[in-house]
Image 1 (cartoon, rainbow, N blue to C red):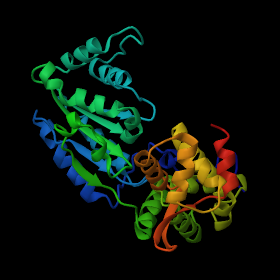
Image 2 (tube, one colour):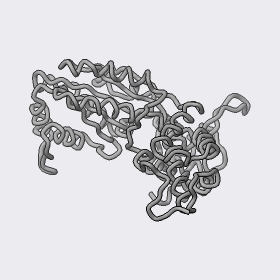
Image 3 (spheres, rainbow, N blue to C red):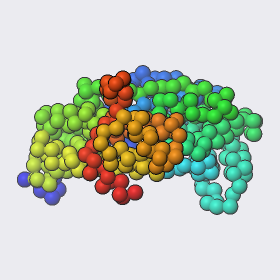
Length: 363
């Protein structure tokens, strides 16, 4: 039995989403390209712009934050990380950059963008600014991303000597095709792809988290293997890390000194629901409407789904296809090809319909 002062966890923070791991495994080539592209900033030169692209839970944000952790040691470099799911307008982005530049917040209202912009750039004082825009694809619907990137890339024309680099982080691998002409003419980023982890890679990473997060011998080999399999099926490393944490807490609730398969199974469904809500929360209203349509109907081809969706919303095919691709990339649906009087693509549900429909009611 565990006493009040006993725990299976050596460090709870190891399982937090914003934790930077001691061992960053199976992303050496991506990390090296990021470092190489940003290295000129250390020598007061403009860095190479980057786009970190790939499915959710593949290490994109972690890679950027690890590089930024090293860059803060250089007084002539100012790295600024921005989560575009939260900071989602040009004004908000530059207010965050202003705070990083000056060390205090600008007035929260009444300041014209031109003044905010100029004050931010003048305050750099020969430092090289590197801005990471995480979840950049969330800004593209109303051209906010184009305005932000253009404002950053053209800053040297407003204030002489300004040097700025941009790192975009996104799940949409075709992101560059969606920038407008003025951005495409000046933004030529190095695209760094982060593929899904294989099962052996997942096993290595989760075992490393267990080593730093739990006391030795706490996580049974069988429980680890169960988590690895579930994480691989879910195709999101974050799910495996979260599942590991909940299994540890479940074992403590049962006053067990070891995390067993039964503890993993006890928290699995609850973990899926939490991650489902997180995914739905990150969608816009139109994307939620498409998701609801998918889970409210029997299996449809992409063409049948489009016709129903157009009747409902009037949205054109190009935007519909982008939204469908996004739902697939964040693992809310799958698609497969079938022969139905010709080769056609079918939309496949990844969750029980009632589970998704209930979750959608919360938004």
